[in-house]
Image (cartoon, rainbow, N blue to C red):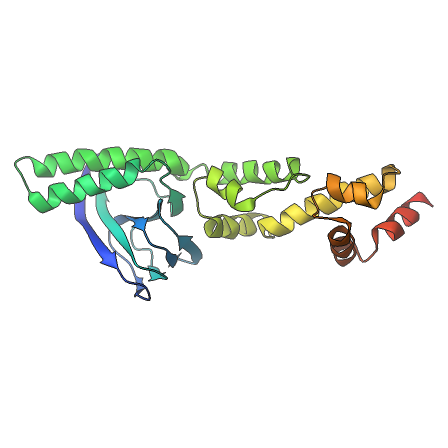
Length: 245
């Protein structure tokens, strides 16, 4: 992997600032150490917040809008062996943003050997980004894991943003990718898993609707009855009666 730094800078961003859609002839990593807002990479919308970063392949249009004051660090690369992954990911321990700031400092100060050292720092950064993104090849596997995790834990008070966090991506980006693969949002997928589990208990046991609601992850029996009827067209009691006849 031989990397050339095309651009490296850190800047303040004010609330309300919008960056119009644009593209570059190089690979770009944009870090958000402070602030928050939303953006778009190609046809995918995302939210950004402190501790996440966006990966943007060359010639891909992207834009962003800042909802609050913050800072961004932008590193542009060219070279071989760079991952083609795109999206938003989490820099949970801050290691990547630290490397990005070192790169910015080397480029700004231009001390002897800065070009070689900044390239080495960038290589380390790209290797770590590749690990987080799976080198552009683990997305399908990660979504499969997420779907299996949702099905297996649908009876719990499951936090879907926490599932996205396990994949090191923002919830907005996770929701978009999940829907693209499975045809429904993660929330709808979770509800379907809960309804399916409830149907099995209604037809195969004498457990009360209150007990089934609790076992299948619903807040209470009222929410269970309302959602079950909306999704199946029948009340839980009516469903049980029909499948016991």
